[in-house]
Each structure stands twice: as structure tokens, then as C-alpha cells.
Image 1 (cartoon, rainbow over the protein chains, first blue to last red):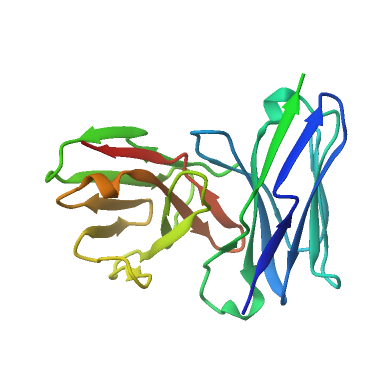
Image 2 (image 1 turned 45 degrees about the horizontal axis):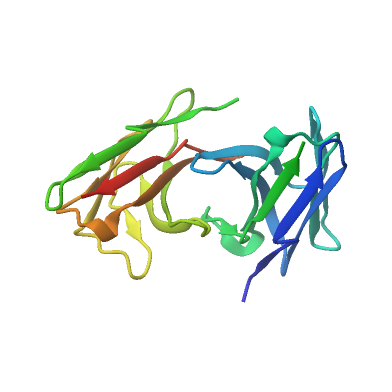
Length: 112
Length: 114
């Protein structure tokens, strides 16, 4: 069964700390998304990766295709970063099926 | 970047009435759009895949007569919740697939059925 595992499930940090959220998946993928959702809010697409590394502001996303693993890093974390972060993948074997499989999310709380 | 909008952002309706939610891709053409449902503290659940000009493909367990999906143009898909009941109260999210660029998510619509 194709699975997406995120860790940790919950993460509490102090303002300014460096944060890492991990995502592992079971078989080859054609794309991996990192999404952000604030409480009661909509989904914001942070990154879409198929290889390498991307950076946007204080956010960095990396992916290791061989190890089937991706990480989302937040530098100099801030209370406004508090949200649920979700990893989602499109399996390589999906063909014309563009469906995503979602991880269960990581709830990040950054305290001032 | 690509933008997907949803309208309305929230809606309250009485039990038994129907509600239509719109999903638009604002600056690209989307041949495929997806509709998701999310319950509190849970991840997104795919309801159906909407292809422009053809019938939607529903996931197992999703009632196609209750959740009507119309993808009338390359920039618009609609989800109509028919004869809504309180258990239909949820957060509904759409995404639009852009070839080689992957999916872009809408901001979601919160439906409350009283």
C-alpha cells in the first residue's frame, strides 16, 4: 500500500528556533507538495518538489529521491508560523491519475 | 503564482436546501479539478475528480447524487450539495491541476447546515 508518513505529529517550539518537519513515502513519486493550513483556514501551497531543494523566505524544502524522504525547514520561527503542515505526494505509477496522497499533518506551535 | 479561488468562503444554510460552491482557476486553464472534504482535525479526503466536459469521477463512498459536480469550462468547476443535512457541515476545498505544474489549492469553503 502506498503510504505517506509525517513526523512529528505535534511540534512545539520557541520563537527563533530552527524547525524541521519530515515526510517519508513508500514508493517512487512524480511530485511532492508541502502545504500549510492555519486553524480554521484554507490550504496554502508552500512548495512543489520533484528533486533537490527549494527556498522561499524562511522556508526551505528538500527532497531525497533515493531515500524517499523530504524535509520542510523553517528558520527563525515565529508565532505566525503556527499551523498544520501537510505533505502530499503524487505517485509515479499514477499515469494520468493526478490524485494526491496526503500525510496526516504536523501541528506546529511556536510560542513567543 | 497560479491562483485558485472559491466562492463563497463560508455559507450557512438550512437543512434540506441546496448549496453551490464555485472553484475557479484565475490565471490558467485547468482540465482537471479536485474536490476535497475536511473534517475537524483530520486531513483532506478526496471526494471526486472533475474533468472539463465530462462526468466527474467519485471516490468510493461519496454519493454522486448528493454532491453534484459540474466542470463546465476550463476555469470553473462547481460542487452542489443537494438537500443538505447537518452531517454535510464541513470544510470543502478544491484544487486545480495545471499540466507540468501540479496542483494549486483553493482557500476552502466552510459549510454549516442548521
